[in-house]
Length: 62
Image (cartoon, rainbow, N blue to C red; front, side, top):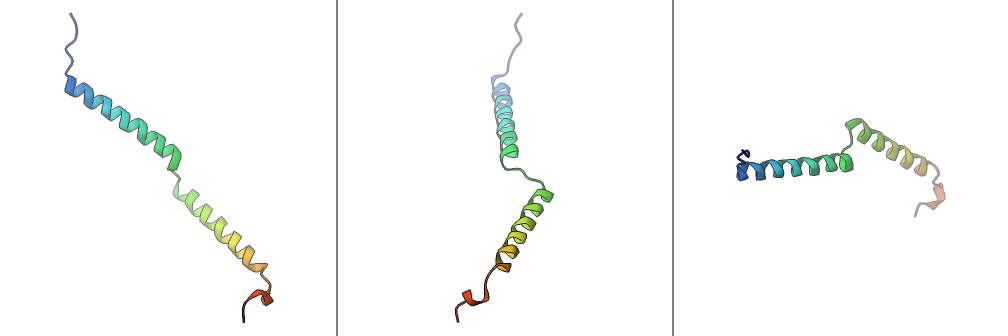
């Protein structure tokens, strides 16, 4: 004898699984830890300081 399947529950299970797959893909694509975000901000600030340090004084408008 075949198992009885509730179609409403089957659709909900399928939708949940699809949302989970989408969420996992987004975590891989966009997710960064707090430490990684802070590290990139520190690197950006360090680069800006290095760039500004090479500026000549006579380049500024009077």
